[in-house]
Image 1 (cartoon, rainbow, N blue to C red):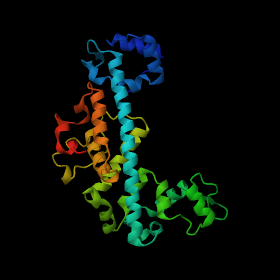
Image 2 (image 1 turned 135 degrees about the vertical axis):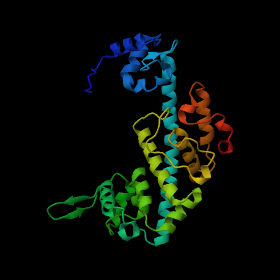
Image 3 (image 1 turned 90 degrees about the horizontal axis):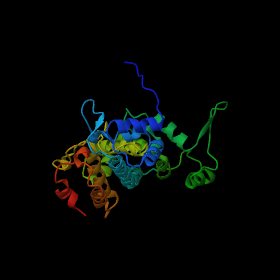
Image 4 (image 1 turned 60 degrees about the horizontal axis):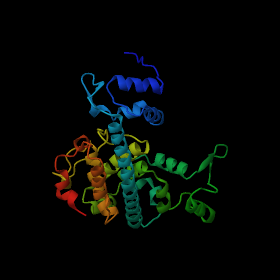
Length: 308
């Protein structure tokens, strides 16, 4: 079927919401919300308040304020998750750098493709890394042009003082890798003992940690694009490891990501308060449906969530 809907102005959008039974007490504020958030984005938070088929009518008594409360909760949740991912990413990057450089006794080991799994596209990885370092090519001479006045002072320092090898040591180069690239890089390392030494502190096999990193990178991208975390089924989710049997119930919901984030923070940020901060956020929004995020009844009483 060909898409035939047309764009409507915010006043028309507001009238449509009211026609479908939404109670709006402040129309000026409602118009401002539609202009600054958007009808389509807000609509994702209206589904629990709809009824009938095809769920277009609002349940009796539903107010715009109720919908905005869910929207605000989700926004705060993204900020909380972003904070956790930052600390986990930095901690994992440090472990990958430390363990690999010590094992190979070479700060430039990553430039040697023999250290990676045969399926890992090492040449493509180096090409992307060169782009992140602002290394360019002169097509006429087919020579690399090293960066000058790089915005990262440590990169600029390397090329000002050294420049040989043409890539900085791994503890510098790793700093410009995105979480997605870091995840792919870890999976591509061919040395099993190196990967094991990185994964062991987290109490899971390297294969599980690799999948955790992949799912967390996806979660970070959702947050970076201001995507919805509440009432979302994730297309990329963390696997249930042996240590999470009986703890992680719905890996494709936010609950799955929250369990993995806590596990990562327990190692990367000892003494963190992320568990309690999550529970405090949920307590400030008692109307939020926990089951829509994958949590079971009385989930906060489980020993995993009682740790401090």
